[in-house]
Length: 105
Image 1 (cartoon, helix red, strand yellow):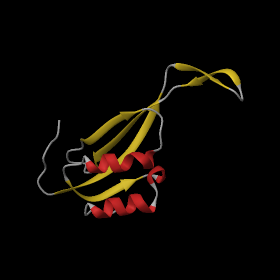
Image 2: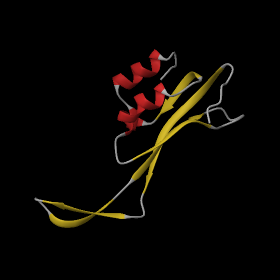
Image 3: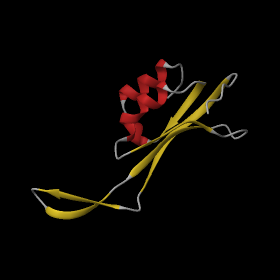
């Protein structure tokens, strides 16, 4: 569900990963082994305490936070004043991406 907001909101982006299953894999270097299979939730939420809610959320397989930010930002349909991020999103390209939508990284 996409909500249209009037005005500007401050937002925060982060991700979390979880697993409860193992994925069987084989490599030439290590032979047989078990490897945990993760899924990640990437989300942008409002940082305003009056009415916090999800602006955007996406579930992915393993991956880096920084690589997902472009897709997350392009799907945001609200005016963002400030965008708070942790160091997993830190890059000049991501700071520019946030500035391009008129927000302060």
